[in-house]
Length: 325
Image (cartoon, rainbow, N blue to C red; front, side, top):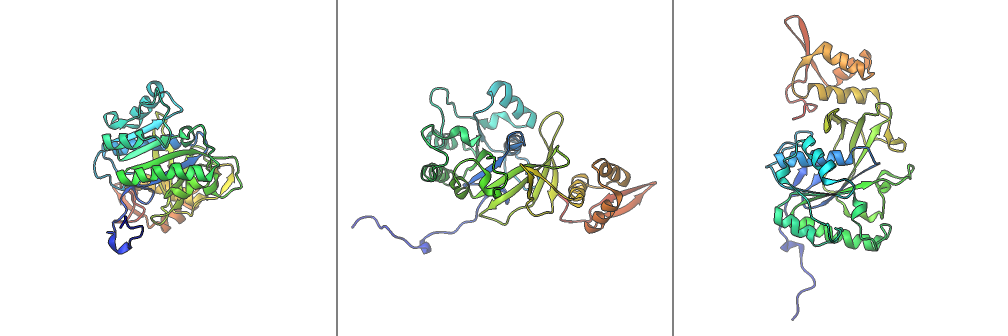
């Protein structure tokens, strides 16, 4: 008799999902990070590369078990004058950052060199930046059938190698569409991805960006994470925002309340320990947050005030959930 065409789930040994960053980026699956050009998608990707290659925790303190190799494949920037300096700026260990040489044959998502390179290097993440540049020229991104075929092969590679595959995608112009559907191309791209993250900026503080989940198939959706760009390059993570996924106001700018901003700033300022109260209040005032809002949020977050010498200090109580890292 030939090979069986049917089997039973009783014969499959269950195993837990492993995570690069819980609950945002799973190993062995496809994750999409999408947003408008210039919002920080590539910068976030390079920050993840830096953390993985140095074995450092993720932005909220989620541990990285060991330093590992990352493959970063970028089609829009020069390797010598842009990508390498940005990797160095982000603090990545360039001895552990690889790329696939495609000088003669342009790399596409269905290329067998992807799996070969992941296995050869033992890479734990493979990043494509941007997704649109690695679609075969004879394939329409709007074609559900063709895109599903390509991405299923890529998803199989991710699962077999237990590598986290991250696709960086630009957004389309439809500001009225549901967040999940605003990535360019067929909806099948988001359908096959197990996690879809979106990056957008604050409507008032334009230097402030948010990373938040719009799809999470393998875990509860994580909280919104805020970040800004450092003057000398790289990212400063500003902490978690205790809000539901924001709604778009115009394009990809997000309106958030003063309380939400106060929470994020207090997490950022106090996550590593006590700070002088006057310093915290002045910083929040510079961000346009008034003393009444600060006092309300301080009480909500159970922030402890105590005196040491002639100065007052603020800190989180022990084991407070707002404390990161």
